Length: 93
Image (cartoon, rainbow, N blue to C red; front, side, top):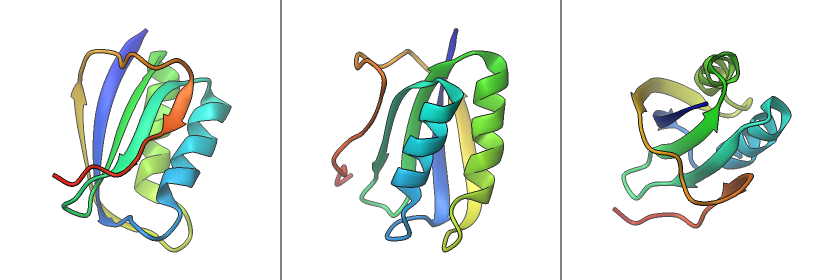
C-alpha cells in the first residue's frame, strides 16, 4: 500500500469536487480524505495500491463537469489515521 497527497488547483471549490473525489475513492477502494484549503485548492490524501492511486490521479485531472483543473501536485506521504475515505471540514490555511 502507498499513500499520496494530491493538491488540486483551478476551479475546484463550489463545484462538487470533494463529493466527486469521495465517490471515486470509494469506488477504487481507497482510504484517506479530501478537503478544501483556504487558498482555493483541494487536498486529497489517499492510501491504496499503485493502480488505484494512478486512476485517482487521472480522475482528479478530469474532475466533475463544472470543475476546471489547472494543476495536480503529487507527493508520497504518510497514511492518515482515519479509516475508510472521508470528507473533512475545510482548512483555512
